[in-house]
Image (cartoon, rainbow, N blue to C red; front, side, top):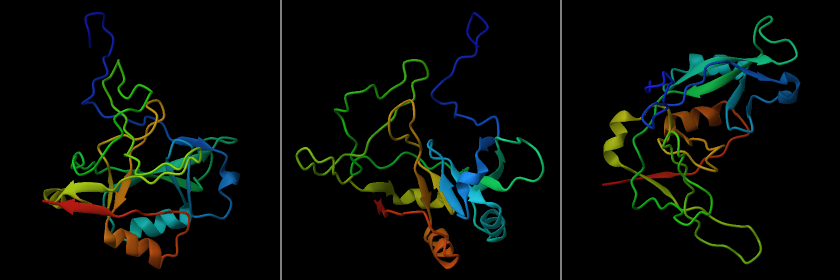
Amino acid sequence: MDAGGQNKITADKPLEQIRDLLVDVRKMGKRDLSLTYSFEVILSARLAQMLQESGLTGFTLRPVWDYHKPYQGEPRLFQLVVTNVLPPMASPPTEFEEDWPRPKQCGVCGRRAYYLKHTRFWGKIKYYEETDIYYLKQVMGQVRDFNIAAERFGELRGSHQLVLITQQAYRWLLEQQVKGWKVEPVYLVE
């Protein structure tokens, strides 16, 4: 607390979700996996149960409630909350955009948001390819099946952390025929 008795947010204090999500459950349809606009991962009850029974590590599940009837009955959806935060990426070789025109650091809490460097732009076409992500090999001792990056990406106000999964989690998702997700490789360096 500061001298006025107000809580001060510091960059070393992680953001914490204090309430369960409320969504329009009907929008999920028959899908097992979806994202909110703020990149929260939503799972069907079926997939959530299978994930809990899988033995995979690095996550917890929170109930997601229908905003039409909040906190009534059993939840039909669950939020995948990744709990294992990896150390910062190896930079270099991971490259971040340096000249993004909007503020990349919060003046109040000191948090930063990044964009991966783009390898090419094609004139007026907004096509780009982001550079690869690298971690030091020493990070492997801290990896769980589900992980989040220490860095936040995107616009500062709506920034999010990337979810990183192991080969074991990748194979499990393939075996379960879960649709609606995409992976990019992460590289390890000395």
